[in-house]
Length: 640
Image 1 (cartoon, helix red, strand yellow):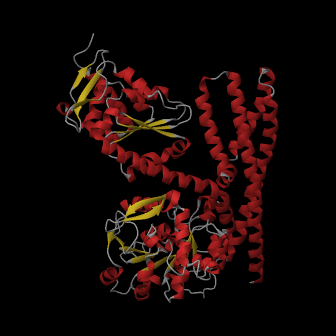
Image 2 (cartoon, one colour; image 1 turned 30 degrees about the horizontal axis):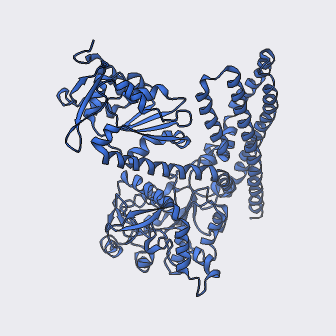
Image 3 (cartoon, one colour; image 1 turned 180 degrees about the vertical axis):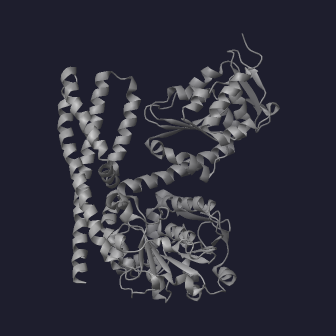
């Protein structure tokens, strides 16, 4: 028998779950008056549907007037629940397809439901039981998604999204709010692009960045942290100088800013500025590659330039630089040295040196923060400002048939598969690529929470939301008229910039970490042999269980070696990624026989132990190299 209305207790049950899961959304739904909910009507199956005006003016039913639940099952026919871990649903409707999808999820898979109408959500919670779906933590509902929301809500699920995501379109919702859902899908695709680049970078660069950090430890412990800079330049204007092609327009104006505006140069612009007689107050570095040394080679030392670098920056740069140096706090350095020796302030991890320069300006309390050379696009179809080191690298190939402009064009053409269009400050279209677009996304996310005034004085390149566009000349005239008090820079004369007494304690700590890592390698060797034996014992439970007891004991020992394990997986992110993927696949295989599951788990364990053992070898070589560097500086300390 069809009910005249859903029971009121159903809405209360759903809302209790929503208050537990998403307080902000629950507050929005709870504010919808009963009379503002959609008018529902019964269907032949006894479930409910609702009609909503569509763009063409005729009513559009959110679900079938016959059997909404059967219709929901049909919507899911083409979805791959075995190989996807995130399903992005355009349109919540009354939630029948959400409920049906939840019941088919495997492992840790999640549903991201995008719905612009809070009234529709309130109606859904009044007539469909979704309490267990909400309580599971596997449903994320976004009302009006934007970049900041996507990053905040989806970042904890990055790895799952990268393992496989699939779009699901609720057809009636497309008719009702097609443009909204198209924009939301585009935002999600951009988020995935950003996340994919970040994940690939993390995995591929983990080994070399950890080696750089280990090799930078003698400088890390001996030089002062950036703590002295916290709020030191509060209220002072700052310029972040990047190497975009638009810098050529105004680089000549930067010399007059010295002493009136804090100049923070990215490493790619440092040599260009010095060659023009501009001495920045700070230069920042984070690039892990040895080639970054070229940005500092051949430059006369200047005590007026303070290098602030992430410890992952290549040690060739840190060794090359002559002047005040501060290395930022780093989790891997803390693992190697312990909290006491490694204690210092840090900055958010920068996607580029330009991001790091901005974080430094914000940390120092600067306002406004003015950006120049921050094109984030191929302004004039070129990537670099003239005079950068890359142009010097190309110079041997330049002739009348192969100009510098042609080399820039070739770079753009090579990136054609990743090209996309963005708008500049005047609304005109220009090209950028996936990587530059990722950097733009990061800036816009950072700017959303920044209390400082932000000015884009690049006079070219992509429009950056959250900034005010103005010419550099106008910015200097408005904000660069008053000298910065000399006492703000007094710390440079008063600091001890190199403390050699900290080398030996740090060397002792590092030697202890090497011993701990080697012990993990011994555990991996024993476990590998046992796991190989177990593969042949799956049909002999008694023998299998006896050998498994020792494997469990070794697992316990391995877990107790937490710091060594973290050091290994930090340098070998692939081991963690393989473990994560295999664990999810095991959960998907929940319906298989015990024997099949045992073999799959053994295969997972063997692959993981092998990856950890490879990580042990890698880290052992890395720490030996770092100890050699400590031995060399200790010998110098003795001579000094």
